[in-house]
Length: 272
Image 1 (cartoon, rainbow, N blue to C red):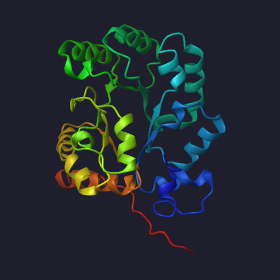
Image 2 (cartoon, rainbow, N blue to C red; image 1 turned 90 degrees about the vertical axis):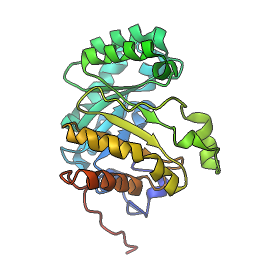
Image 3 (cartoon, rainbow, N blue to C red; image 1 turned 60 degrees about the vertical axis):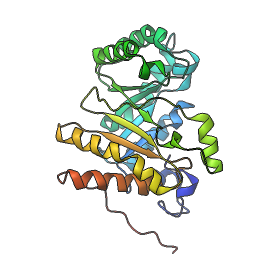
């Protein structure tokens, strides 16, 4: 995500060598979604570069490759899983959680496959699961069954909150595109572990994005007061302003929890 074209020259100096872009991003935010790992396991040298560009407290939430979650649907994928975990080893404690994003067709009947998969994972790592089948959000029995499976191994449930996004019809090409691709499920705000993870999708209009995240400001502040360590990712349809919005969200939470550490000081970009 730190190579996002819209950020070049705004949040990240441009031009900038590829092996320095993550370091520049880390000056804005202290966590990142590793979405590219969904498409392929990167080279180990690439992962070493990620480690070199970030401090030990930086948080990676890394998505498992789709060959494991979508093509094999968690069964018979031991070798690609081993390769992936071995490749990520240089990140060490920077891996906040391995992110198991499941397809929308993965429903309650598939929970035993998830339970078996989670039971085989190394206990030395943390895991977080994102489901997109509506039944997990609307059927109490399905919700309870999934929560029980996750609790057995200390895994978190990642909610992807799109409720503010789907509240009104799209008004731009970016919103129309996201309208056809993003999951439309009921709101979930319950944390299962001491490290909850939230994904939030707003709108093109900043005021609508900010209005829609107010519940998360309150929930996040509450988690912090309970001693939890939440990670929140802020999205919009084009993500053009995501780093600035993430910092604004952090400041709103910090206003309620003054003891929360500030994000890194950003340096203004210059043309020369």
